[in-house]
Length: 95
Image (tube, rainbow, N blue to C red; front, side, top):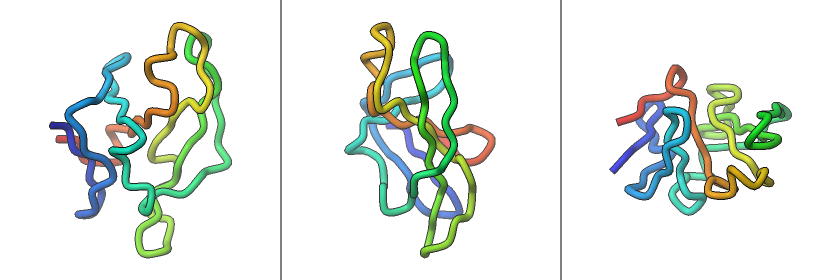
């Protein structure tokens, strides 16, 4: 089981993550969407596609910008992580 926390709040928890390039991608149903809000940030990976980002929002207040990313649409080689959410290791605790 892999668990992501920030200031005592669980952001994601699953035993069904997919590891890509050393990052755990969590299935959408394993992510605490109450603690995340959409960011305006987008980046492009040449083989995965365009990533969208989430800010950590706890108690109605943004506490960490761009804490996580996901690919709403993926290129063919990354179809296994479409919609899955990964977190920055230097912004959260991953156990």
